[in-house]
Length: 249
Ligand code: NAP
Image (tube, rainbow, N blue to C red; front, side):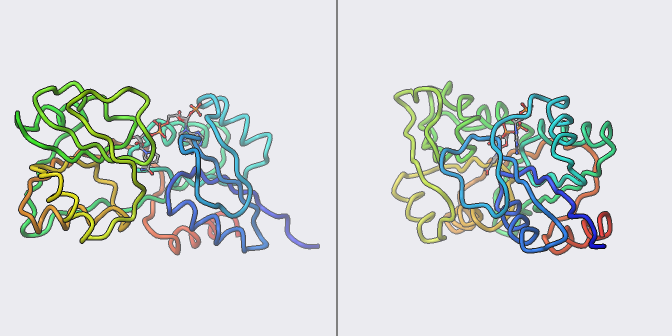
């Protein structure tokens, strides 16, 4: 008798989640459903099933796991999405369904980098010197802290427009990574940027801005990753596939 197909829930929203879904969708042992928060109006194509929008907290996620007969959950959310990771860890413990995390490693400074490490958005906004022109790449959800600084000029780059109206001292650049080193250097020179503000997202798609800041000798305000719930965590798709196989066979 053939073995039962095992159902895997990927909490997605990242490139890694998309890559993992396409690998698992090609494996007859598993069926895969990816969940997105639903913040992006045009998400990239994802293999397997897709669902979108919040579950309704830990209880909602537990209900989904039970109703969909999920055998294993992979938390492949963005390193800064702390709430959904906490919910996943709790739902995993309560439903007795394993939760594994796929998370890209943070960027590390190299010689020539001028990074200032700050714990959160508010500290990042306060660290920018008065009169400075800042390229801020923290995304639409957290840009508000920088809009309150009327004594700086903010160039805010994001994929989709912010929910709040930008003030006069801010300009919005809508663009989707990846960006090349040449593009990043040209942008920083064109906008006469004095400082770059970024999350430590890791990965290659948005790393060129750090190379450009190094090349131009610009300081970088690096916002620390939030702490995430303690679950087994790996950085690569191959490691994750091995872990899934060990758990589910
Ligand atoms: P979050 O604060 O961890 O999650 C907030 C709520 O959104 C969760 O409680 C959950 O709602 C829902 N949610 C989040 N991810 C979900 C998923 N994959 N499937 C279903 N529901 C999900 O995460 P966030 O609000 O998405 O983002 C927080 C931070 O992460 C921000 O800094 C954001 O910029 C960053 N982020 C960046 C990227 C990127 O690609 N650059 C992508 C995502 C997030 P319920 O409680 O109702 O289930």
